[in-house]
Amino acid sequence: MARTPFLTAEWRKLAMANYEVDPSVLQSFVPDKTEIDLWKGKCFVSLVAFMFINTRVKGVKIPFHVNFEEVNLRFYVRQGDKHGVVFIKEIVGKPAVSFVANTLYKENYETLSVSHSWIATPTTMNVEYRWKKGDWNVFRVSAEKTPVPIAEGSFEDFITNKSWGFTKTREYGVEHPSWEICPMTSYRLDVDFGATYGERFAFLTKQKPHSVMLVEGSPITVFD
Image 1 (spheres, rainbow, N blue to C red):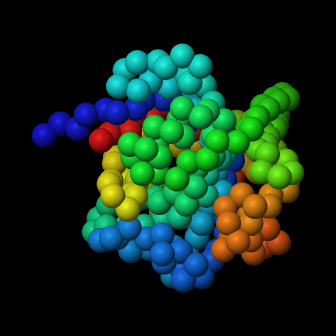
Image 2 (tube, rainbow, N blue to C red):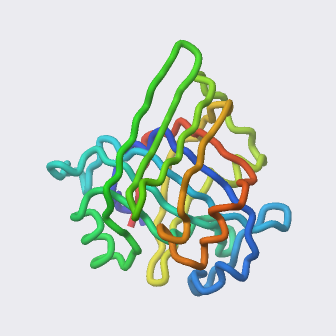
């Protein structure tokens, strides 16, 4: 049976900070019939900030909800040969997005003030995302302007190449072409993880990330 597209959009300029954590921190978030997906025996969570662009829900553009930022904290699970993600919380600046996701799909969205800037030089792409939870949180990356392919089987491939999303009550498919990555030159993380994602994740505020990436992104399709 053909799957029905629920949402189409572009996910662009994905800033990703990846942290190694003890799997026990995540166990209560793991949906039934899935297990934590490990990279070479290690467990990771990722802070991901990016732009939704040209968003359509069932083919329709919703006024004032076409282009917007999202910041999420996610981790990685598998169900047999399905490799996917679980979102601990997703932050957007659009109340209607949070209402629909939380009410109809039992996601964990929160509406906050969110902003971004993309500044390109001849050789460098500077990307910044900000969200206000108490104080302003800042995630800023600078990278080479020209993206390169992500190597199959690499850590970057493990983090980005996920075709499924899982919640406690449902699963959904995500399709997009292979992504490219912009080689990093520097980053700044000024994030209060405890305030943003709960005290369970407060330790990440002082933990150095395993890696930081800037992924170019692409058009995507989400299927029910």
